[in-house]
Structure formats: C-alpha cells, structure tokens
Length: 206
Image (cartoon, rainbow, N blue to C red; front, side, top):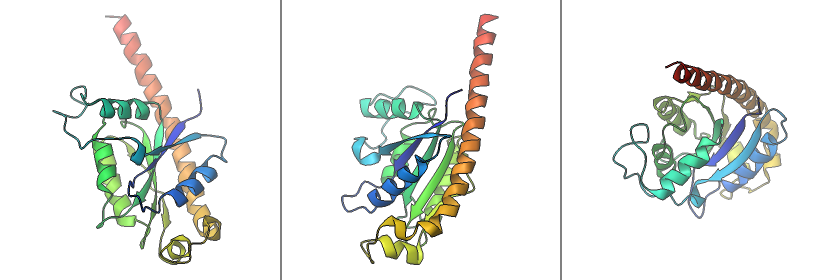
C-alpha cells in the first residue's frame, strides 16, 4: 500500500493574510517525515464560487465546473491538515464554503489542524472539528496552536521574526499531531480499500 497523501489546506484568502508564513513552515516540517507525502492546497487559487448547488454531492453530482475540479483534487488525498485563522470564534467563510463544496471526498479521512492568532485559533479549530464530524471525517485530538506571545513574535503585528524562533514551542504538538495523523490515515486507507474490495466482490456475485 502506498504512503498516505495529505493535503495542507490554507483556509484564509485575504491579500493581507499571515497564513503563508506558517504554511511554509508546516509544509517543510511535514515533508521531513518519511511515512506520508504532502501537497499544499491554497483556497485563494481554487476560484470557488459560493455554494449554489441543488444539494451536496452526497446526493447528486455538482454542476459548477470549479466545484467539480475542487472535488477531483480532494479525491486524490488520504487526509487533510487545515491551516486555520480565527474570525469571530470560527473559521473563515472561504474555508466553510470549501468544505461545503464537497462531501464524498472528505468521508472517512482524517483531518488535523494548525491554528494561529491570539488564542491559536482554538475556538475555530473546535468548530472545524464539529463540521468535520458532519462530513464523516475523523477529526484528530492533537493540533498545533500558534498563539499568545509566540504568535506576536512571528506576526507582522509584533516582532515579525522567522518561524524558527517559535518552533521549539510548536514542535512537540506538531510531532504528536503528525504521528496521530499517520496512524489514522493508514487505518482509514486500509478500511476504504477493504470496503471497495468488498463492493467489487459483492457486485461480481450478483
């Protein structure tokens, strides 16, 4: 079985976003592992419209070509890490819309999160976990929270230092999150593979 392929999804689309700095750090640290592979998906580059389908693709195929293209990208991944900023105690509208634009491509895949902001986007990540459950994902317990003094060290609102200045604080939670992600990605890949094989055998016997 191939290694789990994981998408790192940048959830903010603002021109003035801070996300690019932690995204580059997260991708570099994740790619140092040999048990998973990683690609970056930037919502700013997906050109997704507001959700306007008759229903989610759980019930019927989507019609908008941008939504279909998004679903096809997601289908190639075995799990997800969301890079989360917190807006009014929740995730960005862009991220919520991106989640709504697919369904079957999220199902039975693990999701992890790294958040940044005053409280490390803790409230937004907790909200994201609830959304993930409704999408039949596997939300992980461990997350990375870049908040408080560490956030101000690396943010343009503060000292704007490189991420290396705070990684000693972030590394333990990152390692725990990635270890958990690797376990669940492997487990769900095996389960999905067994389910697909069972469906083929059942079809052959009808």
